[in-house]
Image (cartoon, rainbow, N blue to C red):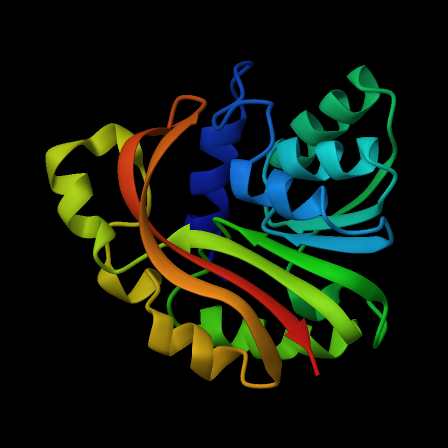
Length: 207
């Protein structure tokens, strides 16, 4: 991953205010409330709002991101909420993760660069135990129409970094689909997720 990508996220996260707020994503919150706590991984976790929430429910939380500024904010948020999270900075290839380590992996607006997003999805499957859950919410390819009307809703501006139902089915073939849909939702998450957008939501159980 080139330094331009890393610099972009460090710049977004270096300010005092939390770019996407400090409250958890609604879809993640709904799903975690239905699952018994275990070990959970948050890829591309940014400033930690979702990881900290999961830890508050009793989950053993692991997270990673390429942004050291994101980690710094996440650790401050964890300390404020009196919870512990294991947060590493780096790409997936340098992390010390183990096969079948996790009971859940939460991809919440984890928009990796287009050339590696499917590779990451497929690689991370080995870290999820059989019966473990994928919780996924991210912008759909149709989201570009919403961006054209309202830049404040956020999200990548190139269609290849966005998702379709077909892509999710291809990236996660070894899963029982509990839920998979494209949906219009209204976001109110910090400075950069404000307004109506189009998302893909996926809840899958590893076979």
